[in-house]
Length: 202
Image (cartoon, rainbow, N blue to C red; front, side):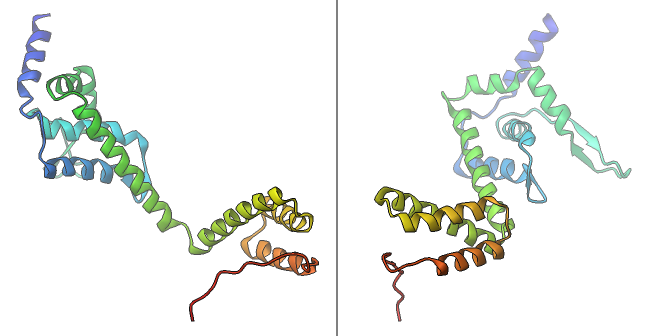
């Protein structure tokens, strides 16, 4: 019991920061965000450990648990798992939260999550082909127009959009979908349909 109290006192004494500068705050957000992605793949299991280690580094004088490089060199690395386990077991984050302003650490964590979500969107945009993005946008627009058609009860237009739905849900390739739409639309009697095309600047 006495040893536990000594450890708690030591942890509380090691908390030497209760507020960060803008640069320090940005440093944590960037560090956590970067380390949650490996080869542009997001790993949700890294979020809490990385956030905890970053807070430990910025708010305390507690040294992380180190491990030697597996290739036998003298260089050491932070043992993330053991350091995180130590923090959880000894409630280090709880003591830091208690010492800081109300919601200070929670707000910092939320900012990290927002940055992670932004990076996820960036990665998705980079890994999704342009043709896929165009096609997805095209289908979304057609869905919107179809809703408008439904509201006005235009039977002929509805036939076209029903066909588009079937092709889209069939798992056909991009080229097949577009070709099928074009062929189907050209077969329809369009005499009673008003076409609205975007204007182009000459």
